[in-house]
Length: 106
Length: 167
Picture 1: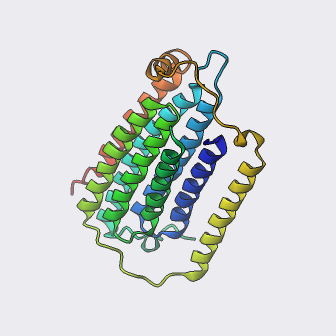
Picture 2: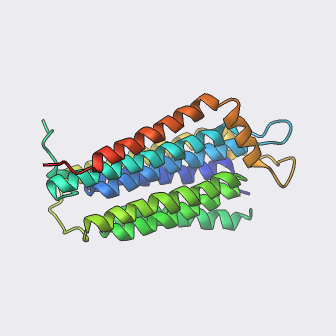
Picture 3: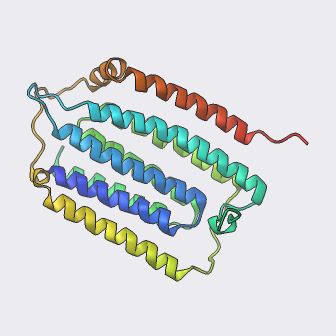
């Protein structure tokens, strides 16, 4: 049988893949995609806990699912704004490589 | 859901998730992200969260990925040229990510509830759309309205950001 821990491990590995992507990749669009992976990994563990916390009437705890709904909405807004910033950046600098964008570097 | 289906979809999600950060071509990364999100939607449905599974397919695999592909093609990004990699930074990032993974395994291993299987539901068919909608419009009504404002602000921000300056 599949346990709660299996879902948590899958979620943790997915989060680590996203984390490694943010740390290792230098293309700003790939970094944004890796951020999406991390958000989704958190969603997976929230849904797993929601299904795990079944109350006495035999109904899952839907509070976590409402939270996931909010996360998906905010992620959609975040991607729209992020991609608009990337387009504006590309128009000014003709690059999406983070090492070429170092004006604010101390 | 049978156990082998869980492992199949979990493996699909993880392999294509790794493909996102391994591929050099941004279009290939975006397409493997789509497959990864579809596997994740299947995992949501295996947890009886059918509404969230559908939302995952519609919003992530549909709208967000079209946006990503649209921007990649608009900017005409080719596969990255191999640059000189800063090996110290690369090894540092890999070590931090690996330490994080080890920590997650330790925490889940020590967590006693993680070894239990999921308790059975009262009914085999559940009306999760009804329950989530009821919660959204009663307990979480204020956050729901705030999220509307957030989406509106994001829309205005995107329009302002992509407007070309008039010389």
